[in-house]
Length: 88
Image (cartoon, rainbow, N blue to C red; front, top):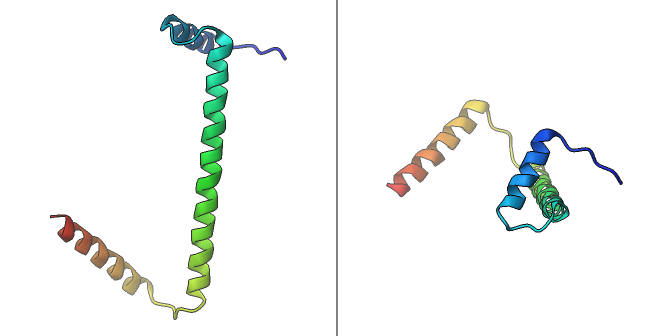
């Protein structure tokens, strides 16, 4: 595989090499790719967790009588106010 780097990417890699922490451009790229993989995995896990919470909220809402928007907002504001008072 052949890769063409931008000037900015070349400077980035050279800067990392100058620190002495990395022995080669390949090592810098290996670390960057590993971190990208970790980031993607964490992003997928976060999405999965959010989907589970949304599914749970939808399931719960099917067994809860609806409330009007004003009542909902007042309830949220009350919870924020209580949390703020608890922190003080």
